[in-house]
Image (tube, rainbow over all chains, first blue to last red):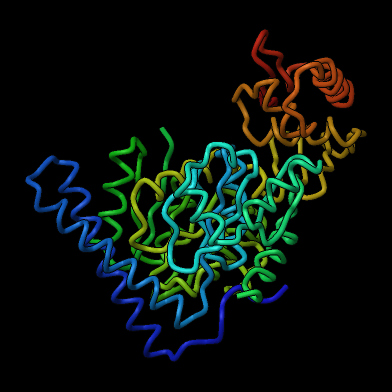
Length: 176
Length: 224
């Protein structure tokens, strides 16, 4: 299997990013603790700023190291978590949710077709734009049509092997 | 109470992570180096370790190797915390006996807590060999032995025993067994679960290991 991450970065860049992320993370943790002590609104605003900074940092990391963000959407929490964890072990920056959320920059979506009917118009539009990898328990024509209507880039039948999913993600990346 | 070990060479970072976890109800110990972490594991056997990847004395793969090899193979989930998004993953680290999961520092605490919960819940599949009294189960192949005697089990009873033994003392419901061993959410297969439990008991030739919890499911009870 191809590596999920890109070429080696310069050691200086990597070290600087380590330190930056560690420091940002520490400030964030301090604020999270302060926030749960129900202090004034300052922690809330600062947390917002920090989250924005961390998202930017993530985009830098994506660009610098070729890290691939993946979102696994499955209403079976446990299955979603297991899949995302498996992908993380393969080097993807994977996350799981039980409902579609706002997508990160260039995020690849693995979507359980069973959730297609619950999508509102804006979520459907966002999902189609992401050209999701669709995972389904059924192989009937209606399911295939539904997947096609979501502009799916791939169609995998459960139970999905992690290797097959990784291959589908690689194909999706190559499509651009 | 579930015991966690937080390992980070920056004491303030370790303290903060520990504080977040304590608020979630875990008992948390701290180690500030790989060496200290290994000592702490031996003295207090945690249920899960959160391990900083970048430490001056020992990097995470070394700590993992020490934990996962040797005579007293220690098999609990290890979540790697890293400040470097690109450095995470078994693949990049090239470690065979890998970590359970990875978290990039700065991830929301809800996500951190969810991953800790997930790793604790699914700890069995990450463990290569489960030993409970005289019973040993190779979690990779499913083979099981009582003492030196190999247990003859079909695939599904084998999977069921793995699942139950991986969570000793916990009642595992019929629905979950059906879903994870038989791959179905449909009822109507309950008798298959009963038959599999019967086959496990017959193979063990000893009562007590697999307890039926009426109306709920089954429980693995360690025997001497």
